[in-house]
Image 1 (tube, rainbow over the protein chains, first blue to last red):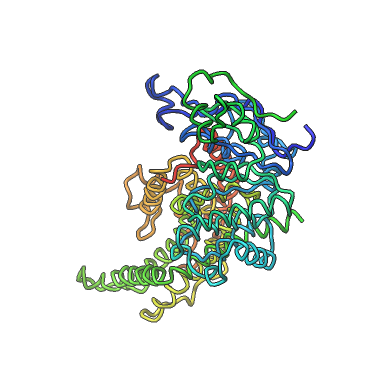
Image 2 (cartoon, rainbow over the protein chains, first blue to last red):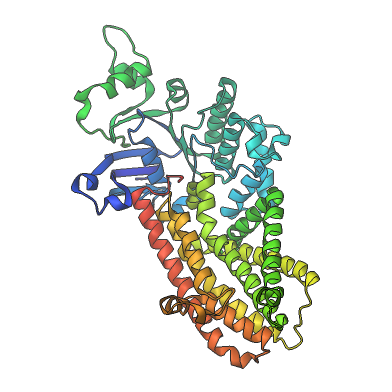
Length: 275
Length: 273
């Protein structure tokens, strides 16, 4: 479909229960864990789609599938028209990801880690240094922190460096998997503002998973709610809340989320597609 | 343009690994000192063999024999470690998903890792040789140095292939893979005649020795350095090494690619081991 940054169609993903040896083990161990049970989801170009779901609902699995770190059992994922399975390297050039755990070579400095990533994406050292300094300054990080080993930086600062790493490669689709986890309220605000700026300045599209309802509501154009590997609702924050209005009371997003993920009646599949 | 991108990606691994060596220089110094002491201890064993047995022996040959074994193994093991630990390091630090998510090819990944491992192995081995040479008179008057270097290059090729194959283990077995690759390395050390001729091994281990590239590398380098064999006479060692390299490197890359696909199907990249 034209104008789609991300198109996820009928994607299922299961994992073996007992690991490598489990494949040969007793039948119970050969059973598979269903992580995604037929997901349909689309992100328009320039859109921020918030993905909310309880722990273990399949959010991170979906992000990993889009990031080409997992292969789906069935279904198709395309990023700006590139099939994630058939053209993984084309997809990788368009995306980057921030996860809750700031994974780095902790003995190396922030700049050394960022340079490593930049070179992996084919950037020159000069471009990488310039971009890294600019991004970190916008995230409120002083130049001194750039030249200290990551292990000497606070959790929040490490997370900012992780965010800088993702933006360094100028991705057009950003996969933000709980990006503000571990940040103080002030830093969280800075990161949120930065995400909005990047969307405006660079025409980036964003898939954002978060547990923070306020963050989802502030940043997202639309919100999809995932539960047990299925999308159970997808709409604008306002429309979602309107759907659950009861006796004149407009519920909060958290109340909507609890209603949707706590009720067995939402068993039917729901697509988060774009018309 | 694509070539430039891939070269930059390969350089990323050289630069990162160099930065890690600089950052952990204290540990590097400890390991280097340990290796030097180990080389000296083994060489002194050769020097003291007459005193141990009470017989008058020409220890010059024995010293050189043991030293060649120690140095060649130090070099080849460094290449093997550098490649086989490429995945383990990423798992320890939790960065494996970020590295595998980058648009760089796996060939560039291993090219950079190999280039660093060879440079690091050479510098380290030359430093050990330098210190040992200060303590012993090493007579290389008859040595065919170009022939020895040629065999060492052949050995490097084969060990690059083995290292890539060993890197698959931590990819498939997050918790046990690295232990398996150490066990594999220990087996090569035992059967390849690093400190003794393979003829002293029991027949079943000698059969394994015939499969180890280190056996041919050591036999060839010893023949070149100790006996001064001309390069043409080293073909019996050089050819199997080149052949092993030509088989092991592409099959290692292919096997790694299949293992990566399997890891992505089963979610094994995620676990940090």
